[in-house]
Length: 109
Image (cartoon, rainbow, N blue to C red; front, side, top):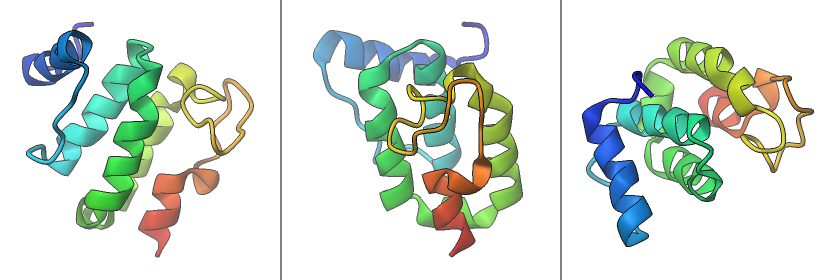
């Protein structure tokens, strides 16, 4: 995919070959981009893990620019926003209800 940076692609390749992923050294924006990239590449085993990390460890990032983050989530939400991208929320395929998204709940607080 041309919209995945080389740095993020290396992280994805490391996961594919080694089975682990290191998110602690990434900025919040990179974690969000990585979440979008793994969704576009259908690496479902990483989606929940990255989303959890973003919510639990990048709260400050989520509060800095909530509008931009929600815009990004909304723009990329229709890629696989249904039961694949948001499995715990139960959004029907192809439909994004931003206010139901876990990231939105953290931003709202």
